Image (tube, rainbow, N blue to C red; front, top):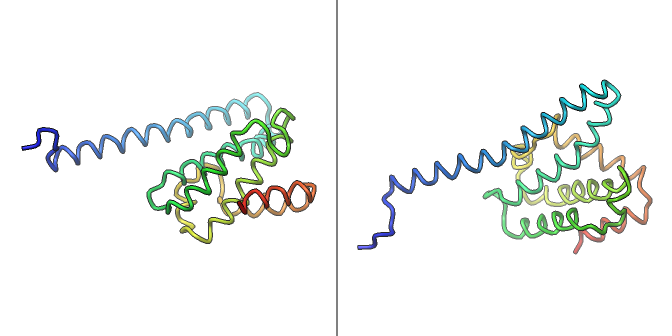
Length: 167
């Protein structure tokens, strides 16, 4: 008899415990985000809160991509695409270098949103919604960011982002 094999009750207990741990890990971001929002609103008022709305989009979308990448409902080939997006965002050298205040995050945000738009054809929209931490509707923000990118970003940079996503 295999002494390492767990009974069905032990396996269920282990799975439930793992679910609690994973939920705690995911809740960390929610708590941190809320504290940062409250601090911003308290210290900067209405104007700062409006700016925070845009500043929080990158971490909201980054955590969305990370959560989708580990979601069991997502096929492996989509997870590979998400890994490429995560790697790009984490790379220190981007199309617009990250050390440029505010502007340095734009290419990361646009790349994430355009990447999510591409994979949305291959996954259920509910997966995006289930993993979204940001305020408002995720699809609304995706549409808004995509439209702004088309109007705001240099066409060469936008095309380079789209080319990266085709790889």
